[in-house]
Length: 343
Image 1: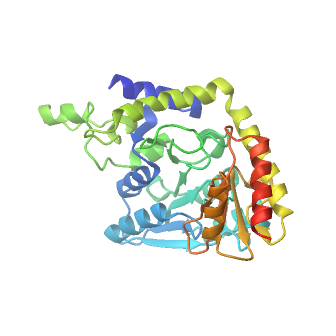
Image 2 (image 1 turned 135 degrees about the vertical axis):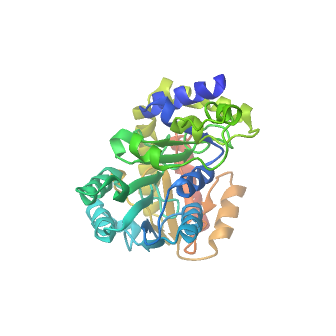
Image 3 (image 1 turned 180 degrees about the vertical axis):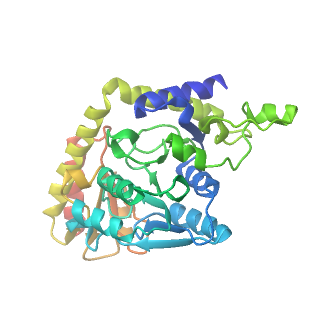
């Protein structure tokens, strides 16, 4: 489809990758499911993820591993998110890689704590573990990037991941119901299509009886009737960020997040969960409230026209987010409201 190609081209320009390597999806969750179920896992294969990842990663891995007879292991990369360090995170992950590890499934920015992983350092550790392995035995690094895309200017080539999965409706401000998967050449070959594509050569094979392989992008873009108007509008979201400059967007997001963290850290009865270090955080800022029901605080903040949320994990924190549509005055108002409501 011509308009699909325009979305791929816009996304490729933003990400610094080949447009043919981008599949279009309806969400991050859909992308993760397509990737993990498209991998040819074998009995005894080891899949490594973390305790900090979201349900979508954990459940997609559980279902894929159960079908293949593979093992999924979850490791903790830090005990106290506020005190996390790049060396600790990378060291714990590297120590958990085994000879049988075939997938390392990570999230760029943890929606549970706001911690941003040092993905480049982790990718280097995975590459070191892969040294000397046969292609079929290599571990691939799959990254859920939804809270990094649009908040951090790093591209997949900078990060060193093999597969990059994201929705576009969060920090990129694209339409809901839109997402993408990018795969490096070697990793893309390893991900088999799961849902029939409505594009050539897949559709042409049906007529001709041939079995011509599709490029990763079109072959792994699910067919059927999608919310095409939303998908095609994602082109404008990429163009918007490109016009401003991804580096400027990331710098502004980080500037405001730092302002918010500094302010909340001084509020009595509030513990900052997200690291102060800009290298280990992005736009998400999580806090623990010593007194009262955190869900009630979120409600009261909404009554004060300040939007916060609760982290949907076993350990619940109050979560804020800064972006280029946030102003310094709004950040300060959020801090003042939390101070007043938690006294």
